Image 1 (cartoon, one colour):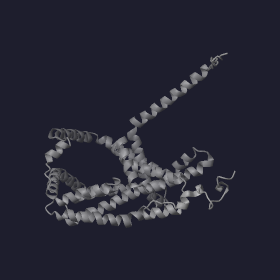
Image 2: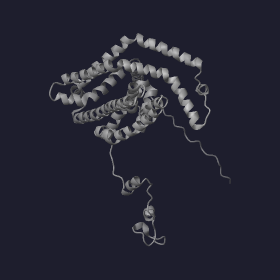
Image 3: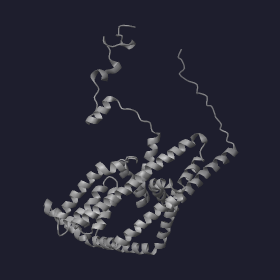
Length: 403
């Protein structure tokens, strides 16, 4: 008798899903609301990006002024202290422009006019030193910078200059908004902090105020330290360039101070390259060597004495992190994004320092980090609990013959 190999088909169970029409409409309204909110935020970020950047820059400016404003506020009202600090900054800028404005413009014009000669001289120096035969026309062709395109760039630049000259009123309005926001954010900073704390439940209001104070203090000190270092670097470099007789000493001094402090990671090298080239291609080429020696000496003094004292209570931003943040800000929002990226990252790092948990390293790891080598476990440590035999202990150390 042959058994049948047929199997009965499994029964199919039908599941019916019932949707309430009211829930469908409710979900549709939620999705529509999310889309409208996203479009509104996008419209604000795109259309009002100028205003947002102005407010953000004003906030960082108020943080940079906060140490001096807080010191003066012990003796007078905070609004008056803010007005005195901002008035002092304006007076300094007016005096500087009155004394050096015309000279600065003339030296910048001289540098722009001498730029082709500087480039040709640099190419000739490279050919003589390295024994190469580079041609400026060939280099420009490889860079896809033909004379026709250069003329087009010049025409575009000229049109841009005319557009800038025609929008002086807009620039003045933006400057007025910046000054106004900076004043109110600095004068009403404590009240703004309490207002933000009132938006949270009472159980976390104290934590909110502590986070605000720590973030504002460290970020403000970071911005103020960068500004102060730029002033020190630019002033000392400009005076040194004047003493040795370097052409365009004022413009090169300001260039050195700003680029060295506000261009992350590679700013120090970029800032001194232009003065060195100007010195090497001047009638006295030894000026370039002296400028290079000055840059090396000043950098050592700044790194070992000036910056550690000024940055002791400021947040420390790694050069690689600052460089990556500046590149990302430049790609997303242009030059303004590059300038604001590092203070924003400093603020985020401050928040991370507040909330993250630190653990002590193992002794072997800390010793290997100081020696610059990777830790290697000892043979007994590497085996750990997998060691079997007569020296092993514990219930798992029994031989295979026991059960």
